[in-house]
Length: 440
Figure (cartoon, rainbow, N blue to C red):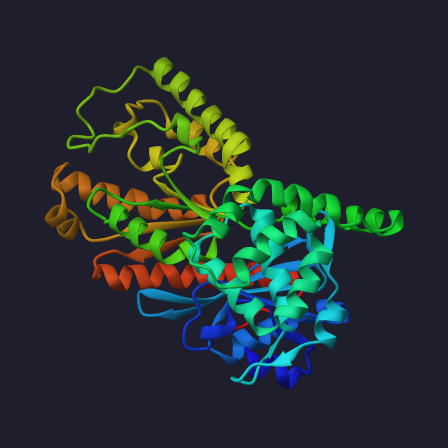
């Protein structure tokens, strides 16, 4: 990443956490760039992905001047990640705390060769971030003490310019002597962090009316863009009993979690967590008799309506908030195995209604010979496993983005294939949204 930045001539500096770089990168890489270069940054990050054999799969603009990128590289059935988090002027909650031009003018070289801020700028950046988030742990306290020790005079001056004298003295008492985190000075800081946040916002002057109006307009555009192009993803896994859906979903959730803010699992329907129904393992999916024709049609319409309700009230908002939602089965599962849902009517209404649902972003149909299905589960007869296999294969035509996966392979190979499809889809989606040329 640093070589790519340097070769492009990008004015940058790594803002925090750099003491262990490059051997240990415990979280996001926070870095600042000159405002004039922000429009070129996606192209530079894409070049970084291409040069490192990885994929740019996420670009989340979380402030008007800040964008969070996710790079993923496949390694067998697992993924490794890099999370560059960029900003120009450092803004949080409508206020500008650091001006990029000033930080870059005072930057210095780290012993490893990359650019970092002055000790005072690094201290203020990290302090504002922790106070405004309202949390502080032992490692973060150590980071603040280390930055302060590099330039006590400069950090003290910047601290007193940031906070009123009383609050600044409370923080300085903790960081100046590198007191243990459990000591009284640090516990005073932790206990009073809400008061510090209030003082921080009260003491920092607001920008001019013109600047605030411009930032408000940019933030409205950012929010609207998130609604139109959610950074979350919904994926449905379908297949006959014994195809290994649960095991694949578990591995995919673990491997894809670093690319999203959170991961949610749902059985069959989209709905809020509080409305989840606890599903016991089904050992005889065809035990109950089918409903009559009218009862089946009534249940079908209710089933369809519940998908619309769940999509509008929960699924779409979850995707806006960068959530990965993994479904075990989906509405169209009824077409492949109507007896499971006690449906005895014609499949044409179900097929027609399914086409009027906003489907998942990706669908994976896990396919295996009936012999393999029966070896794993014998909940239905062999003939039913063979019938279901053919029915699920036909479901691929019912979705816009469906892939048939050979589930007779070892789990590691199945997961690797699924991850490849997900990463490729997210890379194309991100490239399209950033106006980049997608990689072949």
